[in-house]
Length: 472
Image (cartoon, rainbow, N blue to C red):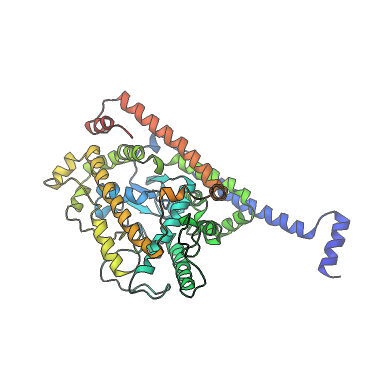
């Protein structure tokens, strides 16, 4: 008797399908491993007081969710706080590195939460910034296109798969193509842009002379609707914040993470366990900011985190961090640019642009820096740096998108995207939508508590400076 006949006979005799039983067993297995991981993760988060949570520990881990503005915090806050010798080795670049430097105090990276397995957990504070899931997906799409399109306009490029130089003599910096998740998204988008360009050249695709929407210009670039339904977007972009905070990206350090991810693909409703862990981890973080509340978030970060860093460094025997910025020569471990690619010309331009981001108050000597640097000066430096950064990004985007003109990404262009596409993005990012709502609650509590604290204790001059300026 063959297997199909046996299956039918068993179904008649028992009322159960062999295939159904197999599926049930697979679901049971998946639920077990996902729930076991979630229970263990939640157990690890137990204990600790609120007073302990709000105190900055020895190591600060900035968990940078892509396209949330985290790089602005890195360049304009953290690099104006921590001395260069206190940055963890290879911070903010390669997928894998060993943060074993004895005096390592700052780690900023796209690695997910699972990297804490490599760090001294009891001595590590975690901070992050989250963004509206819809806006983050838009931004991920736009940035992938922007970086990939530079290969269309660079005069020395003739192939979408030209290898990167092995020996970069210009700088020891790191290309966007080395960084998760862009090392996956940009080459994919680059290959697609070249394919569409070649199709236009041989007449297979006609350019839309009066396109209504830059997000749906099929002859020039991958439409947004195609991007959000591609397997790679499902793998990396959708619900990316939840998986990163949970420590379950495809870059995870967790043993068995891939099996858990496969189970979540097959049984999406098991995502509730992942979301539960991500929410609880946000609860335990020192600081949670919101991209949409940029100015308030920056002010709170400066006072909740920056003030503690300043205090720690002023008490330490190390020279204060700003002393290492006076010459603007920090290129050894640094990220070259906001979206640099592997081409030498782009690296040269980007390196110059990024050096301008290290704006800071210059004092006479290290001792004076240690004694006089305040939260107010930090915030003043930050605002100047942000202004420079935004100007640099605008110029770089305008230059990059020339290769796919007339496509142009803007708030006005986004408003033309059909509501059906927006709804689809929300549906595909249901976990992130709920996590973002939870982050909003945490943020509101942090902001309210901080404001109440300022009215119940004598205000330092730096705090008075901020409150006097108001929050827009």
